[in-house]
Each structure stands twice: as C-alpha cells, then as structure tokens.
Image (cartoon, rainbow, N blue to C red; front, top):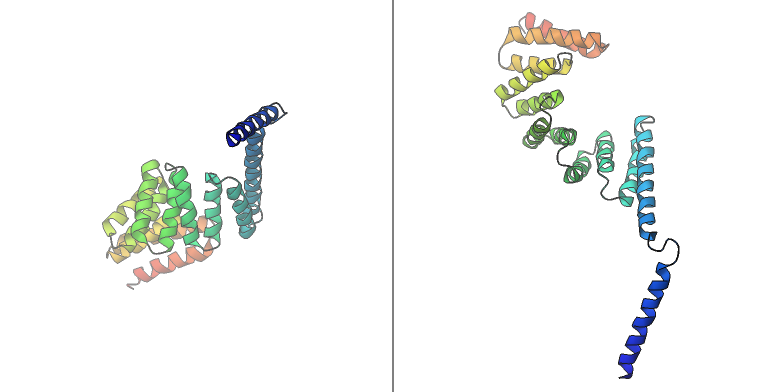
Length: 232
C-alpha cells in the first residue's frame, strides 16, 4: 500500500512540474526554435562552402563545411550533392558516388545528379553502370546533350559502336559547338573505317577548338586529319 501511495505522489509531482514548465516562455516552442537554429546553421555552412568552392577553388575547405552542414541536417540533399562535387574535384569518385546515392535517395528525379554519378562510373571504367545513369538523366531531361555525349563515349568503350554513333549524332544536333563531340565521333568514324567522315569531323573539331582559343586541342585535331589525308 505504501509503495502504491508513493508512486501516485511521484506521478502527481511530475505532472505538476510539466504543467508549470508549459507555462514558462518558450517551453512549448523550445524544440522548434532549436531545429530552426540548426537548419539555419546548416544553410550558412552550405553557403560558405559554395564560396570556397566557386571563388577560391578550395575544395578541401568546402568539403569540411559541407560535412558540418550534413551533420546538422542529415536530409540536406544539396549539401550531399555539392560534397560529391568536392570529392570529384579531389579525384575521389567512390566517395562522390556515395554522396550522389544519398542525393538520389532524397530526390530521385534530378537528371543532373544521375549525370554526375554516370561520369563517376565512367571515370572508374564501370561503363555499364555509367550507361544506366545516363539513361536516367536523359529520361528526366530528353534534351540533355551532355548525357547523350557521355553515353556515347561509354557505349564506345563497350564496343557498342552503332549506339555510340547515334548518341554522338544526337549530341551534335543539340549542341553543334561542342568540339569534344566531333572529336569522339571522328575517332569512331576512323575506327569504323569511314575515313572521309572522320576527316570532316577532325576538321570541325579543330575549327571549334580554334574559335574557343584552345590551340592545343585544335592542333591535335588538325594533326589527326592530316595523318588520315596522307594515308596514315
């Protein structure tokens, strides 16, 4: 009986404490205020990271700030995505893929994220997975010229020449001022024994690179065209 009375007294005392606390300023809103402050701090870290990334090219510093932003808000999709970019700049494609996976889990409809992950898989010579991601990028953005271009390159590495050619053609139709598209299509034409078409693409690549002030790659394209013209 004594134990039961003590339990009742404890419950009454606890209830009284809670009721009194509820009347104190900010008691009910304390958690919300804390969450808002945390979210704001995460955004501030994210913005500072953008400055380091874009203005200072300080990818390690940006990475550290993004770590903080994500620790404060584990559902911060943009922070994972930008941190993946830092990993890419720092030549860590596996870490980038991990962050891009998380980004996709939070938003599975962003074509740019699939494109970025596709590039990472491409860099790791995982061409089948790269193609899958470029497929998804194109699914969500059918006018994504760079996704067609990179899918073509992945298919080229897989020996799927017809598919690669179709993608290079599509990329060039969408973006006729991309010298890289002409470069890789020229390589593919050359590999397929279509010398005339290859020379034309080397010439076009050289022209575009020259217009963009990229003398190094313009000279390389000119040399490839000259070699073919001379029968090499």
